[in-house]
Length: 197
Image (cartoon, rainbow, N blue to C red; front, side, top):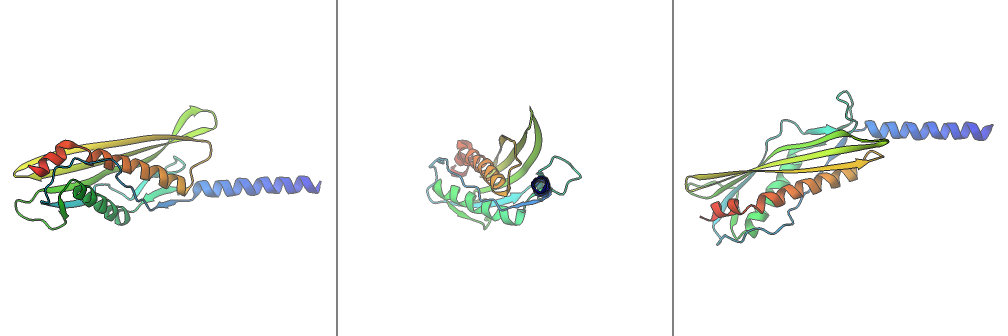
């Protein structure tokens, strides 16, 4: 009898911990990195590089899929944008240019905008399996000598799971997503070509 009460108490404890984990918010610190090669077109020219956040909110989604839940997933603009600035400058430097944040008349300019970062709880259609649908959208605006080139780069990922991803898993998934987006942006030969003209 005592064993049965202990077992029931243990199950209740596990369920309580699981529910508490599902309802807890995640504040994620992301550090995506470009890994793809970039066009080698620069000859040391200075390029003004600016990273911006075009999102309406730091909240990118909800772990439970319920709008009433407190299990928000938050990615702070104040933490992410400086990292994107650093990666954009690194990419421009690898292209052969000299990045700077100072604007100047007639200088090539590149603005990297994070237009969207979304984490949507979805239904996989399979019993006991849920899924997370992630999307990142970057917009890059290159301008030089009166010409502007605008590119939009979208990365998507769908991840199925039986147990909701923890903070580390969500961080890895979103870092991979944004890294893929950065690879798409800076691998665009038209972007590099305009900066070098």
